[in-house]
Image 1 (spheres, rainbow, N blue to C red):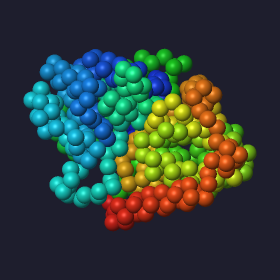
Image 2 (image 1 turned 180 degrees about the vertical axis):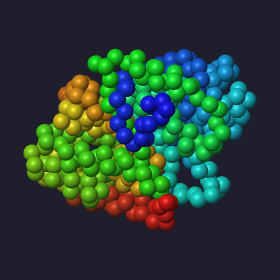
Image 3 (image 1 turned 135 degrees about the vertical axis):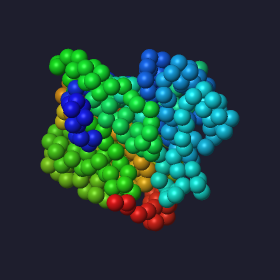
Image 4 (image 1 turned 120 degrees about the horizontal axis):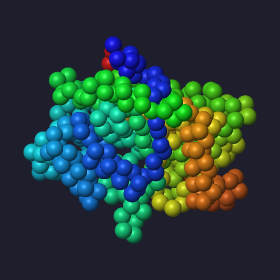
Length: 393
């Protein structure tokens, strides 16, 4: 039996090489390079895929790959990618691509409105992968006169990409998919990664209905294990009671915690709700930094210069109990230090620190009342859309 067959899907794999990729032009250039060099299979999972310039460019590359014999599987959320026209989907299928929508409205066997496919995943030939917070549309790309939203992804070569491919195949729901590259070929590739470059990586999923809360557990482990520092970059930061308790406990044992949040938001009600928690964060000596350049959409966390998680998971109860989320955890000191340096550079060059003084002076009674309303409204909406969820065995 090939050694790669013995890997459990939620365990760390060792034969990997990784790189942190910033969003915008760098991400989409790499994505196109991966599509163009694919020889066997391409699996993609996206929450949003639109027919703007960026979407059309990616679709064109995917259709070309399919026409040269690559099996292309595009899995999209039915709700968020609804604007993608039937005509475009038909043209992709005519080019030989396989396109599926996750839980189409009113046509799913067990439909939960709040349960959406929030993954942003690309896997090529079972060897190369991109996992992050970026969807396929202009706002995540660098367009003329309009820089991309701040986002990040993990590029990975090796065993974790093979595990990720199996996850995509499982979620597609068809056991008769075309065969992938031979296990022997994938094993040889993984074995060719030099030992000094090998990095521990594991795939982490969150799907409360399917009883997968792996990312949630990764965060709990981080709060429990951190001894020196935690830095979290998150676009919609609304930690629930348990996460807040864990954050507070980490601070009390001497951990320095920083959160990098959006200064400019695409969902202002969510931003007002987030700011309602600033008073609690500041009272617990958690440093707050608001990113000022564009909309912040990245989801990254790092602790003690030793561990990093990157993906689609936001620190809020929507990611914990409603959406399907996917992250990659990396346990590697040089990579963690590099990620910390990247986040520190963002803080120093592009963020404004929120302190007790400037927060108190800018928040009058009625604004505070509005923030509390937004916070309660979002929690009530979440409860409304998830109260009927049933966990499956």
